[in-house]
Length: 230
Image 1: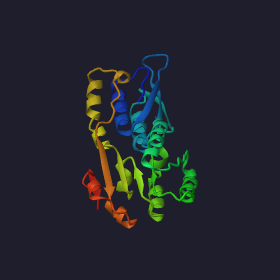
Image 2: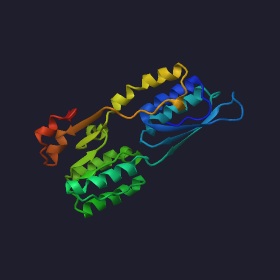
Image 3: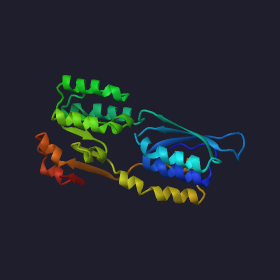
Image 4: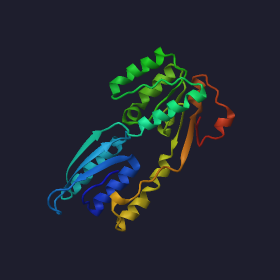
């Protein structure tokens, strides 16, 4: 989250709380007078805009003296290039041939599926961004239809029928929200609060999906899972 200019205590708390939950970037544009409302541009880089948009719109309707306008836009997740580079570096040592397929909008998913099929991929990994998160049902259905093992980053995919995921615990991140709210309530400036990296990661496995595609997951992996969907 990026905050610039002035924010009322109410607006600062809302921005911090929602960005901690939804991982959005918030930029405020101050007007000429300190008493004037601010304009907010919210850039969604995590695919959770649908979870926060109504809350911000409700806040604007309730406090028009604080917020003059809100715009919502989507953006590619900035962390993806680094993740892809790390995977490409690790692939040779694992004796894996890695094919990177970029999807910039939903209507490119079918082309991505066709490329995976044409390359006779043995499995695929889905990196989380607004496109993949919002269209996870379509991705999960493709994997099931083609009996392909797929790895995801967040547990929501596994809850919806995806095979397995490993990544930061969203629950643990949400539990940190009150800490940020408390700091703001005590006078801390949102823009100066250090960004925290996730410290708790979770492995989720859907045993029903594994059985459906004919995959046997070793017991040594199952016992490490934080969540098992049976």
